[in-house]
Length: 409
Image (cartoon, rainbow, N blue to C red; front, side, top):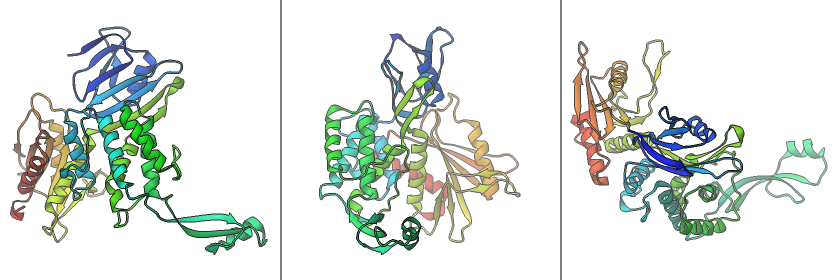
């Protein structure tokens, strides 16, 4: 069933995997949405001049700007409650940092982008309460005095043996370090996105002022790496969320001067990350090792590659269990059969008698299928994302017990 929005629209609100919406759109915007892999967009076959828009697994907000015209905004709401989504996100990023205890505060916001902007700003504020973190940054420059060490090769190449100026390299103790640059980049990114509430935007501007002496990351430049340490511990939550903002950014120039700008979050990836990280944490300390996105080959000639989401190994590094996470819209009749064929291939190549598919709960309960002439059992589990965090983790533990009954987890 397709809902119809009458008249030319400047925005539309869609729900993840909900029925399509038909509305009056300029062809350029419709084509841009379709080409940008933002939503399923196609001309409405029953209404000439209208476009049918249907959200898939990507949620967030995107603005399509037409030269000389008003931007068209698409907001896609997840089916999962915002607070639950942030638990899944936080646990996937750092499962041992107490995300269940409200570390990611989404306040009263019910849409993804306002909630994310609020959470990022609050975490940055907490990170900077003791002042900006300082650290050593490797610096190379041309100077009139010697500082650090002389770069002899550069001195000869650039100055032909002249004494001054001198090419030097040294470590500078400064606030202009990767951690602060990432935070500033996230703030700048959020300030450019449509749909950030006025009060959150005001607080983000305050955070940008606090980070004013930090070198901004120019669009197109790679995001600098950072590594969690004891010294930057108060930044960890803020940095994790900042990377979510930067990794989910979408901005491109489309043909004809169209511009697409916004933030999109893939629920497929979020569900996969949560399930695999939670399984790995469940088996931690059991002398078994869980590996995520573990590369293997289906054939003996190593020509056909495959990458199960999660493979559990024993102390002797032999495979004990395999699992794949499948967040997708189920058909009314139940789980998609293609997933079973994929899991059968994993079990065959790894020499395992059982395989496990984990879905977000929908139309079908747990099921198990014994493959004819092979004896391999394929399990399909349903994880209810509507549960509280403790219930979600208990569901993961129950799946882990079925994967490896003798571990006592």
